[in-house]
Length: 439
Image (cartoon, rainbow, N blue to C red; front, side):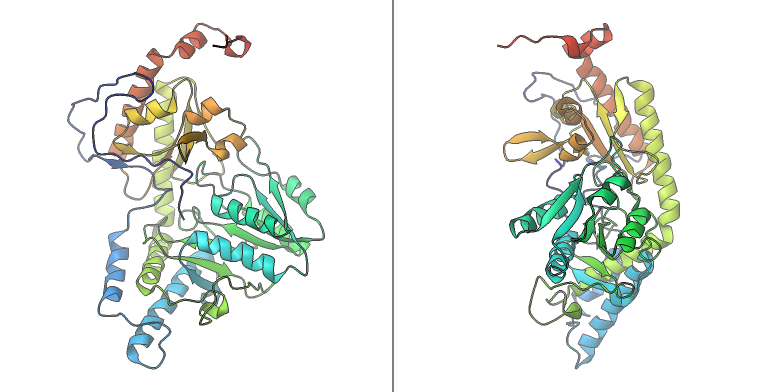
């Protein structure tokens, strides 16, 4: 799933001059700590480096095992089909499903489109009301906006200041025409994990289909579609150290049986829900990534949570006017979204240009708009612009966390030395009561 709404930063070159500010921060020529090399990647919510074990599983299916999984009259096709079915089982095991409930797609954006549009079309005689939330990924929000053009009603639930929806809001939004609730499992920007089991239980009590975009959750935290009453679930490979361009959709077969209208026609592949020749190497990679995640998730989550908390503590000890965005009790292990107030966001990113992170700004044409997710939490533009998302992953080390946090602290301190707003606040001046003169 692409994250165009986030500005990904990853540059090799040294860049000392800050654009639009005239501020110059000199990059240190100090030798790098052992185990740290530049550029350094800490944006694992955008995508992940492929695990070498996943690549090794995939390689034969690019060359010697090249059959079409739909060719059922010779050994080459049987071999490919067997690999695809093994992957279905690996994915199903990770999320508590059965292999027959796994449909392969080109990624989670397609999975979300297929789920939402396919359910809307299939159940349009029953109702035309869909409920989602304001902080969903664009793959869900834009799909819902398209359906509104076709006469569907969509309710966009607000979130509370900590990023969680209010279950009572969801209850009030439901009516006799509600056919689908689509609530993201874990947010890609702030890492907040929604009360999915509670939402699923409510939906089943009301006879409403429940879909969740679980891209950031699957493989990172426990996901059980049965225990959580999830009817349809989107996932992708490249967020869990697998290849890009392949994803899956879980579609419940029993209690209730969910039906989805195909959005791509031709050939009737994937139980008629998604036609097209299967990407066998990618599917093998997705299955392998799921199996590895299932085996290592508990230990990996504990390690990443420890690193994340260590990083947060370093920031909070060295800097004032910093705060975490999103509920930290219900949170992804490797996510840390922090605002560094009284620092201009673009200058902050330029100061750490050899580190790949994401900012609290969305890249839209020639302008930098504040992230709609951070705005939904009630953050002002200035605070949203000063926010950084750190995405810790499988291959990040404590040495890297130390390097990134120390460098960012240094940049923030230097920028604040040049900030008149920070100076005024330190002097006890209430900025909200100042009348700024218009030029």
